[in-house]
Image 1 (spheres, helix red, strand yellow):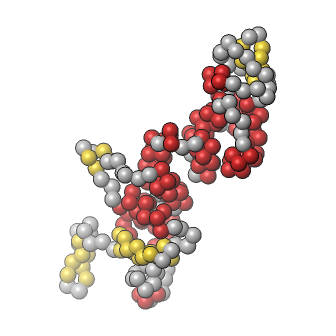
Image 2 (image 1 turned 135 degrees about the vertical axis):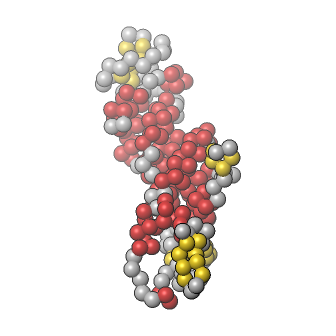
Length: 233
């Protein structure tokens, strides 16, 4: 069904309304449809009552919607995923985005509640796990509420021989760092096996270690139960 104006009809599907954004010093003019369809934030913004045509933000280059605090490259990456979806054999094709670019997509899709781009960002960042430092993954998990990332990342940090550094503490937050340090120090030697001194969980392995010492044997320990209890996972 098509609407009509001035004696001419507008196709209901292939007549696109656009919106103009100003990000830093760059203008973006994009279809409104995907923004409205996939983000309640933008949907509500477009529904806000405005004045006459000359006053409507986003209608033209002279009066764009200004996105403050957003970098041009961040917005570009979100639009790449949102507007340039490619499908091969019914499945979404791979995007040629870097780790930092996918992090930008994660940031904005979370901020503006774009469900599908957020899922895509989490999935692709998971596939780049070997490129992400576990401390950084903990930071991302807390910042963007990705609960499924917390346990695997904390396990890596708990099992490694190196202690938690001051810089990592700053990045994760000192409360998180102190909790993780306590997890690492809760294991003591008991009957020739690793056992958590606070909850009695047997953790496997034949070589024990005492608090304050770390060696390669820690990679085989099951810190999972203690991490779950300490971080309420």
